[in-house]
Image (cartoon, rainbow, N blue to C red; front, side, top):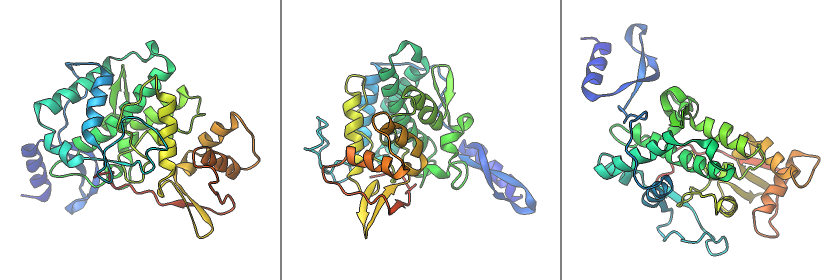
Amino acid sequence: MSKFILIISFLALSGCYQLAELPPLDGGITANLLVCAKEDVKGPFKTFATIEENFATFFKTSVVSSDGSALPIDLDYDSNPSYDTRVDYVALLKDKETPESKALRNSILGHLKAVDLETLTSDEQVALLINAYNFLAIDIVLQNSCEGLIDSIANLGGVDSFKAFSDSSNFGYFIGEEKLSLDNIEKDKIAELTNFEDARIHFAVICASAGCPVLLHLPFDKINLEGQLSFITRAGLRLPRMFHNDSGSSFLSQIFDWYLDDFISDIARTIEFDTDEEFIEEFIKRYTADGTEFKRDNIDYVNYDWSLNKL
């Protein structure tokens, strides 16, 4: 039996399905990347509680402190100087097939599919979409971890393909009647709601990777949204992966490069500068401690770590 037939036979037994290209097999035949059979994301769904309560339950059970300390109830910047978090993927994978975990996932997906964004205020939409992004990024990891945890969300669909972010056909979820990718949620929906002028959004949506800013252990909500966005931005900028000075240079996360226009537009709402570097400096100083130095003439970027933000 050929290698191709062996692979197909194995898939039939394992319940996997085709997603993206693998290197050619013997004889020049190209196969596909095979991932776990996923739970249906189209429904029908049985929902329970509210979506806010569902998100609160999910983040409470999945997000943990990076150093083992208790996570704060109140998001007070000065009282939480080392706030950083990870996702306990091992525990989530262990419980993935339990009735409780399936019911919670089913309920969240059901609420998202049933929502009518046009009936919500702008802050309600932003909060819901941030929570959806963070939940779905984790769900993509879990649903694609077949016989053990995947190494990186960026490699789903091919090494460094980033299809998990852009491919709505294979990695999209319904929010209302639209099937959206993670990029659709962040770069289209949330960006448009904030008029591309609130760069704190890029500190709030977390792409399941170690190079990301901090994943909030609480759901964002319309009442506390402003404070939550400022807290998570300030907390993120205290971490070396996001910003630090070394050897006469200021090192920034690559999100400042990728979303430069958003950072400029954010600051330009209140003050104008002549250079990109001055806009970035103002953003950094606005969300860090008084007296923070920024070497705008010597900026470098921290290599983004696409390995999982796991415990």
